[in-house]
Length: 145
Image 1 (cartoon, rainbow, N blue to C red):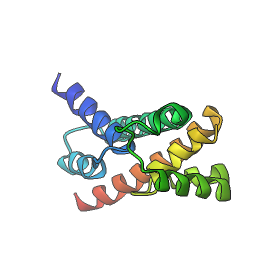
Image 2 (image 1 turned 180 degrees about the vertical axis):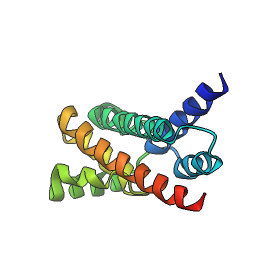
Image 3 (image 1 turned 90 degrees about the vertical axis):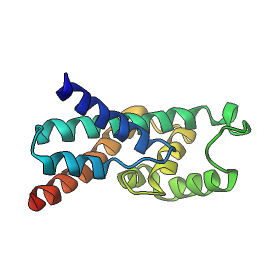
Image 4 (image 1 turned 60 degrees about the horizontal axis):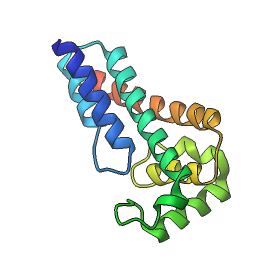
């Protein structure tokens, strides 16, 4: 049961880290890898799945931006949303390969929803970006063991 809760906890932290809420999943992943008590591939899988699905939540929020952007709880200021949409217009779907980056990654995934990026291409590019980041974290963490 502890094994499952470890992976589920990492999944949840990674999910929250990909949304517009402040959270950090790389440190948790690195600590678990360095502890050498869990399967590294399963840790990477849990983090990648959670982070990718968190980005899908942003995409869905972007799809509903017309209904939500004037609500007080909406997490992005209008100027930041406009900046992200302009960025996405300029660089297109390939900008989703930067979805792993702090600060700009979450607004890019939201902008993809606003601009109606098809879910399949969104998922493919975001999955590549998120998995790549966690593979780098795992490689660095393994060197620290």
